[in-house]
Amino acid sequence: MLKIVSTFVLILSASLCSLAQSWELGGMLGGSNYHGDLAYNIVPKATRFSGGIFYKYNFNEYWSIKPTISYLKISGADSNFDEYRLRNLSFRNNILEVGSMFEFNFQQFSNRTIHRKSTFYAMAGIAAFLHKPEAKLNDEWYDLTAIGTESQRYRKVQIAVPFGGGVKHSVTPNLIVGLEVGWRKTFTDYLDDVSTLYPDMTGGGSNASLLTDRSWEVSENNKQLANTGDQRGDPNLKDWYFQTAFTISYRFTPIKCPFQNRSSIE
Image (cartoon, rainbow, N blue to C red):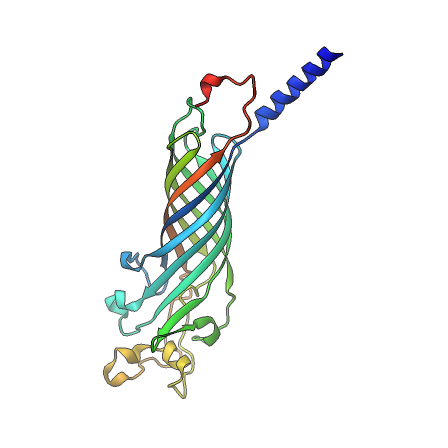
C-alpha cells in the first residue's frame, strides 16, 4: 500500500512540475510621443516622460501574458511645423493606461542554460486609458474637455489597441532587462482636442474663444483669423500615442522538482 501511495505522489509531483510556470514583476521607464493633428511627423523635442509597472505570466518559453499600468505624457504644437504656425494650436495630455498584452518570444527564453539568454519579441493586446488634454493661456492650464473648443463633448476614458516589440536579455537567471517600443492605436481624434471645424465664436474674447482660435497670438494686430466652419483638424486622422522604454523585471520560478536535471538549470 505504501508503495502505491509513493508511486501516486511521485506521478502527481511530476505532473505539477511539468505544469509549473514562471512569473515576473517589473517596471519600465522611457519617453512617449504622439501622432495626430498637431504632429503629423515624429517630433523628437516633443518627447515626454513615460513609466509603468507590469506583471508577466510565462506560459512557456515562447508565450506570456503581461498586464500593465502605465503613465505617459504627450504634447504637440503647431509651432513645430511652418505650414501650421498661423493656426498656432498646442496641447499637453497626461495619460493613465491599464492594459494587457500577449507577448511572443522569437527564441526559446527561460532561466535554463539550454535556452538563449537574449531574444526579440512581439506583443499585442487591449487597453483602456484616462486622458485630459490641456492648453496654456496666460500662464494657466485649462482643461479642454470642459471648454468644448469645437462645440464637442467626448469621454475622458477611451480604448486603445497596443502593439509593438522589443529585445530582452537575462543578466542573471532571474534578472531580465530589455528595450521595447509600443504603439497605441486609439479610436478618438481628441487626444489633442483638435478634430473638425471651428465653431461659432461670436462674441470672442472669452477664454473659450481664445483657446479655440489661437491665431491671434501670432497674427498682425492680434486678430483671430478663423471663421465659423473653417477646417480646424482632420476627423479622418485618429490620434496615436507611443512609448519607447527600458524594462527591468525579476523572474520568480516555481519550486524545483527533486528529480529535475540540475545540469539544465543555472
